[in-house]
Length: 258
Image (tube, rainbow, N blue to C red; front, side, top):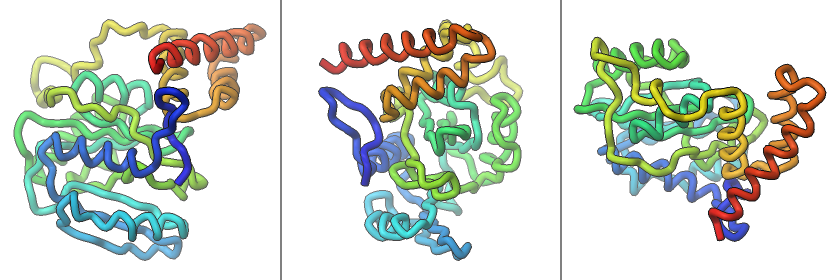
């Protein structure tokens, strides 16, 4: 398994650690049983249903993943869980909401959106999760087609072969609380929609740059992506701006990890 995330003193977080970070967060959020699904290249779906998290056949899943199978997981069907799923949430928004609500953001590809797992104030059955997901999808601009209450998400620490074999990474491994997201019909949006963070384009790009370096992207790759992001706004200054932003972010992370 290849390296994924930058860590202190040049260390790298391995794929298995991303998997464990996701499953640990689920355990802290009250999930102890899961359905594991393997989709092979020919479309065949292989299932391991209602397995304790500690007994998930991860070695088998990794062997399948090496042969271009995609690996998915969900809290086991037939049970109530205080956890809901959203698909294709914009990365900055996903991280913001996860950090503010004690949830988990999973980056499934550099180009696409994130999977977002959010705690609720009480366990919900499948119909209840569907109702909550539908409401949250409207608030956060998530995929409205992934709100069934039993939708599968990608398991972190495995390759996403739909996107050329890129790694699926945990972006917010720590669960703080947990707190819970706002209720439908309540007095507001999810907490992170109101924030004191710098929401200017430069502030958002700074946060994105730091997270991509933490997630294991090389400074060169981050620089090139940032130039593309900022070129319409910064014009001829985009390259200087991107280079300086990456240099500052790299130095910031280096100081944090000393």
